[in-house]
Amino acid sequence: MASKKEYAIEVRNLTKKFGSFTAVDNISFSVPKGQIFAFLGPNGAGKTTTIKILTTLLKPTSGVMAVNNFDPVKNKNEVRESFGIVFQDPSLDDELTAYENLEFHGVLYRVPKKILKAKIEELLKFIELWDRRNDLVKHFSGGMKRRLEIARGLIHRPEILFLDEPTLGLDPQTRNHIWSYIKNLNKKHGLTVFFTTHYMEEADRVADKIAIIDHGKIIAQGKSSDLKKKARKKSLEEAFLKLTGHKIRDEDAGSKDLMRMNRRLWRR
Image 1 (cartoon, rainbow, N blue to C red):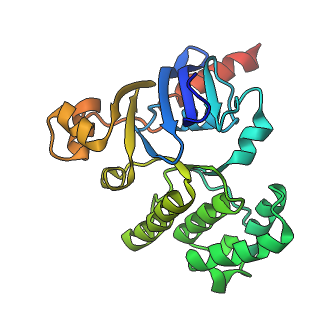
Image 2: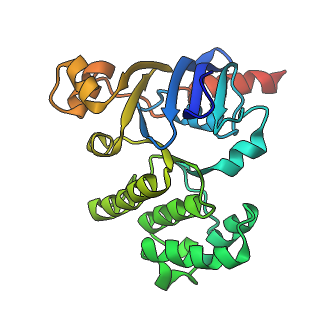
């Protein structure tokens, strides 16, 4: 592994298998501190599995990792304290209000009370939900919930922010507003951002560096301009399609394998 001062995230020869299915296949990459890093790939390519490993939700089959200088397998608590995350799937408590969701998350991360109240107000005003702070989340639209999830991921001022499809389903105005705020945090406070997206223009505009993963393997890394040059295409979307192919992918590429494996285990 490289110098501890250089990287917020470092991955070497990471592999994750589910029975006979290899979701992540011997990948390596590094994310310097303060970088905005896009992790792109078709459905089922291994993006979410990689994020779950880096954020301590899954154990790798093999490989070496460091997140904020800590091992996600051996030092789970230290790793968890250093990052914020917005999951691909909804993870808010629908029976709590917007304010209570942020407050509960802040308490879990031991944000001091004198700071927490002001931080909640700041974030809810930023995502334009301050007037709805006392409303139950179950009455919110999908876009409102997404905005609240992003605010929750920032409540404890993390050093690294993981975003798995953070702007999925949001209108262009909201997407631009959120990215402007995140880029400002990146510039002012050196926040490292690791995100996945299917919006190629978003990655093209925001990311300092991009890695493309397909069938569990990283097939290209570099700046957007590097990937376009490699694929001999004018747009990142065209380059992405050239590198990964035009075939429509099954969103749950590994699900059938996992289901078969679980059925075999159940029969035993």
